[in-house]
Image 1: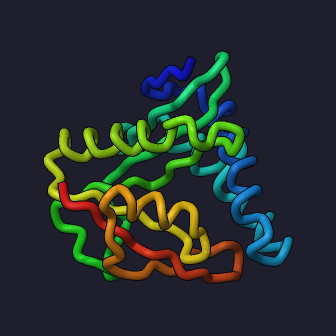
Image 2: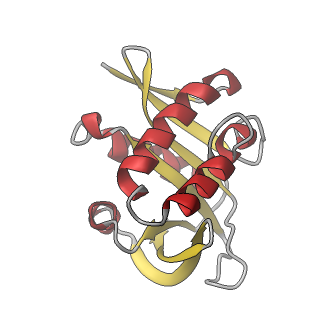
Image 3: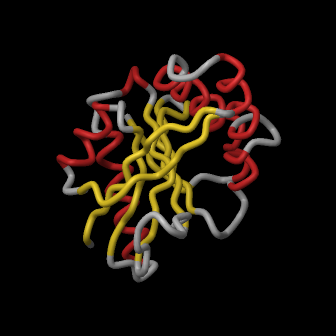
Length: 171
């Protein structure tokens, strides 16, 4: 049985370990090793953004648990965009990760539904997210759920800059 709940600071190491694994499985081939290592050091681990942001009230986290193991999570915040798109009235889905062993079990749709509810509870008129242009599976998922491409975002992995698509869902 999959259980969904708000994440707590104590969940940080388990979320971080799962997210790092999923990130490496999805993006680990996409940049030189030194750039991958630089990104991992910034995003994950005890000093990484995921654990650092978890207790911050500016962020909302939701976890999906199976057999007391984190199998997915979503992270929400105010938009980070300044120039790329008009983010007026929007909230942003910063990350939605699901362990590959649990794809197809409804975890991603459940976390996305939670993200919509959080955005609406914040008075948002739209939900924004970014997705790597080469992540076809994720792009199809978001398009299936009504997101449309509205701009581009330069995502930095170490010294490498990739094109992420900014997608918007009207709420």
